[in-house]
Length: 86
Image (cartoon, rainbow, N blue to C red; front, side):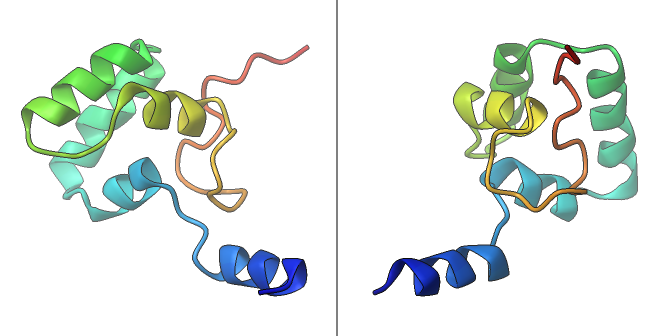
């Protein structure tokens, strides 16, 4: 596969595990997750809660998404929410 093909494939399916999970949450759980983000709960804490409910989403995945470093497209829900502006 060429690099261009890889780039195009990634752009078409660019959603990390946390981004996909957020999209699948029901209204109430989305509200709870929004509270966590608003309160800037630590990524490790969020991951532990998600894992306790059977969601396969570890601390690194949560942190990468909230820091805006995952492969989700720009504008994805909460992508970069914890990014510190310089």
